[in-house]
Length: 273
Ligand code: NAD
Image (tube, rainbow, N blue to C red; front, side, top):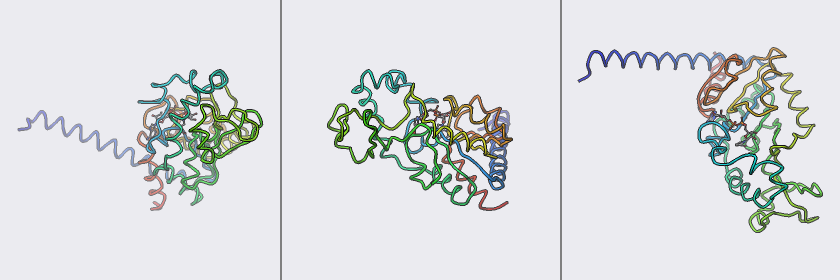
């Protein structure tokens, strides 16, 4: 039997749960309203948006960096010093990236672009899932694992076209000049290509809504984008599983899975409240 005291506790807990659900619901409606009336909404995405596609994040609970030391495996220095060890790590996580499929969060952003509620996506991700979901306007500031470059002659290969070399060679080499190949991603210690960075900054500066999704915003330059957007009086929206130190800076925050929250926002826009 439930005592009077326990039943009071349950109802207080239930009331709190209901209150937080109502709060999240009204935030989602407010975000939908912002996106519906935005002229140039830009999404800034990070590893968290791909978590439900089976790709681990770097930080946050169970992040990849709890298993690997980034400086030891994913820096340009480690690539130059020991490309074979680097490729061992790249193969370990790479296949998963190449096989991953877009999830409901990627599809929701593609739908927002198709219905003209989103101008473009600026992503820190290297998995190419935004394009595979249907987004046309994507700026990849850290590159894309679906391409591989020769470190000597700069020839670019589609990763899927050189799978044999990836499997057979310790350090895959260029078919033209024999140079070592490197995934077309920006490693720690490397600079983002200037043209890409300028383009990303331009889009963020001209945004009237910046929708950050699944990013801890710990990595520069993405960590500076909310402030850049605010200089243009943009509304900053944060959708992330956990709190980040940028939460208090955002106009709206929703804590939850992007694959759950983004489709609800798209739905709210559709019902046209
Ligand atoms: P991060 O790992 O620093 O942060 C990810 C954030 O996503 C965390 O705050 C976490 O709480 C949140 N998160 C986890 N699951 C989520 C979900 N289902 N829905 C919403 N949020 C969720 O990642 P970052 O900020 O992108 O920066 C780190 C670097 O990681 C980037 O440079 C990126 O290149 C690289 N990275 C990319 C991939 C990818 O391409 N899929 C995967 C891992 C890391």
